[in-house]
Length: 334
Ligand SMILES: Cc1cc2nc3c(=O)[nH]c(=O)nc-3n(C[C@H](O)[C@H](O)[C@H](O)COP(=O)(O)OP(=O)(O)OC[C@H]3O[C@@H](n4cnc5c(N)ncnc54)[C@H](O)[C@@H]3O)c2cc1C
Image (tube, rainbow, N blue to C red; front, side, top):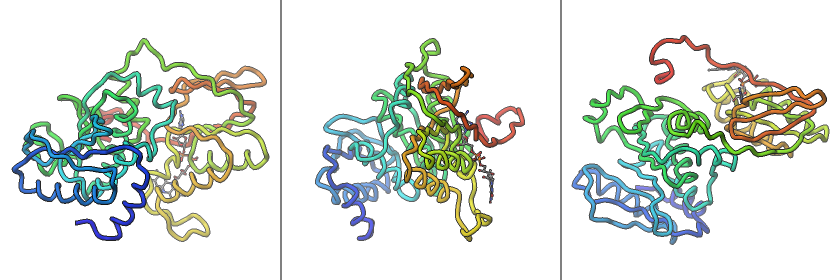
């Protein structure tokens, strides 16, 4: 099932996981059960730290959970995480072991305020926007400890999709309520969980980040350029962005960046990030600016994560956003 090149890559990725990861698979008479078992066995064969364990519980469709050091993580895959979801599966294993990238302390601060809920994301394996959502919720699960997330391949549950009226994926549900549909990012999803499941009276714990000479709000091309120029002049620089790359992330083909004949949005966004990381710019992603107070010589900025900082110079490069029509269903479906 997995070709030799992928297995070699996985062996390298899974070197030194330092935790025992179990892929706990339920019994199923579904015709695809053998395929799932084969995939899990092959992935487990690439690391001595990953094991497959069969349990007696029965499931109508192929289904497995990720456990770490003998305990459930809350991450479940229902269906075979192939296609675009193969990456979500591998990232979940790396993040579970602590070798991947988990949200930073500012975001964990927000995630911890959310009540434990069971989240389900309906996907299709050919959907390009689905892995971002699955991976974001799996990060939330690992940072929280009480939230669970199940990726569900809609192909195996057509009746369920019909009953829920799901017409597009990714479609995210808690109980019988759809909380998100379509593209999204970690900050946006945390925000949606906070709106419904966090104690409104309890604001995120305030945390001072200190003082910077320059702070840039916005991580699109303009904000990134401003931050790089500033830090190259030798001044302490902070960049805050809800989404690094900005609108570029929404773009497919870009053909008017002089000297680069063709690139795509996510690739350009990733290069912007790499360029930023060449310099000692402090980058805070997945934050929204809540307030800016002019204190004369300094400005005080508060973020929705509870973080507060001051700066001498504030550069606002918050770009543009889609104009909203204000029609019913817009927030849920667009
Ligand atoms: C679909 C699409 C296709 C495009 N194609 C092309 C193309 O082919 N060629 C081209 O030249 N241009 C193209 N553009 C336009 C280009 O993407 C924008 O001109 C460019 O991204 C603007 O850069 P910016 O840094 O000013 O702002 P943005 O890219 O809008 O970035 C704004 C930044 O500010 C952050 N932000 C906003 N509010 C807050 C807040 N309250 N708190 C924290 N952070 C905040 C955002 O998260 C983001 O990081 C396209 C745009 C779109 C949407």
